[in-house]
Length: 358
Image (cartoon, rainbow, N blue to C red; front, side):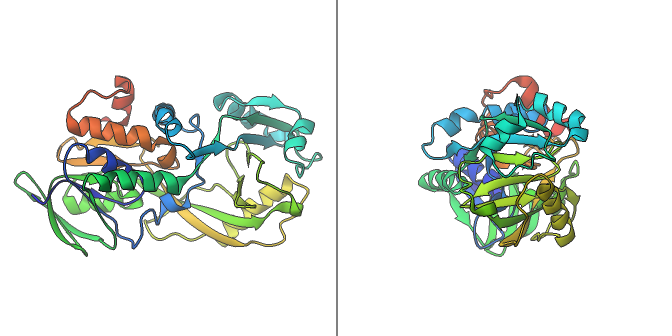
């Protein structure tokens, strides 16, 4: 065999797995695009908010904190602010409780974000436990770790065929053919396509488009210290980024896997929801883009060997949680592959396992 582990996908899931699996054997990563993290990983809101998501996702994100704290410069303060109109009280109270916000007055909220419209915003919550993730620093750190142990990371290496062999697999790609003892499916929105090539049944993953726009700092304000803002039920969000604001309608539009772009009408609706809550109108859009958030049927990551083909390993369904969960997710993958007892609770491991889909 050319390698022990062949990982398909060069986003944060695949590269973090490469770092962990390089401790156990030889690794090849195959990425379709000319650069790593081109799709979902490169278009992330890049926030570490471990209370965000289903219980199993929260458990995985919480378990990632120790790794984040060990890396100087990867996390930096940001905070979260939840704002709502009076008629959205029920959804507001739900988010306030689930995500552990402190209730604050609208006046207190406007001291932090002065553009909030007091005639519209009736409810506010604030939390300091959300932090920005330096996604490039994290990704490159994992890549250096993997390469330092001899891993090969191949870009422009689109996989075209996967064939089962005795004791492993042959993976054909634009970069050549390689044989491997195990295939790790970390292909993001393309995980179902990879599974189909391998003849492995998938539980069924759905890529969902999310559109984003970058707008100038409203009213000339210094937004660097503002928290991330979002509406109840996450029907929009705004986040400071490099002196500007990223605003998203936070939509989840099911789609086929592709190099996504923003939907202008959906983006306009999201900008309108943001504008309704602030005093400064959106006068122009600097740029816009979209990413694909890919979910399993229960919206929880799928991590583990395939039930019927154990040499095919799933590392999929990261949804919007890929960066904040990757330290624990990649460690779990290596523990399972290496035959080690995971540090995670057994119920959490079962909640993430492909076997839950039967």
